[in-house]
Image (cartoon, rainbow, N blue to C red; front, side, top):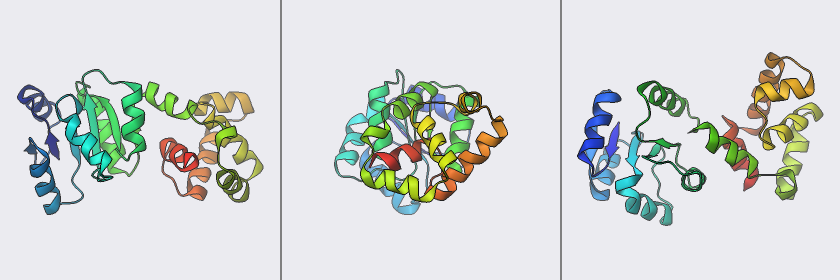
Length: 200
């Protein structure tokens, strides 16, 4: 785990709260690149409040590390949407609880994207079927059953699994099976990846 910040207080808090083996602390972009050369798969936790200039530079160069977590004291949906769209694996509050960080960490380790609920809802509601490309619509219709297409459309409207179960009058277990099948057929791991795929 690489912690990337210039705020010693936040670094101390992270080290204490998010105990992990092989903790590395970096303060600038050159040090980060040096550490990533040694291990490309490292998970980086970046403090957007103090290193946003470096993160923005990496975004402009299309060089965001593949396992980047971006945290800030007052998360903003607009910032979250931007960093997730450019490839960050997580975005949230730099002062999150140990339990939330553990959930975030496990999500990233399993190859998925983690966002807090309001950001997830914003990402989902930001995409509507009418703005899907012809190719995205064709892919959905060619690969999925009619029921799965209906469920994708509900996901794109921001419905949770529970809300889909209620609307479609099916069990939550059935919804989860459909969602799992959709992810498998479209080669994505989670709802955020689905949105990013269909939005391209």
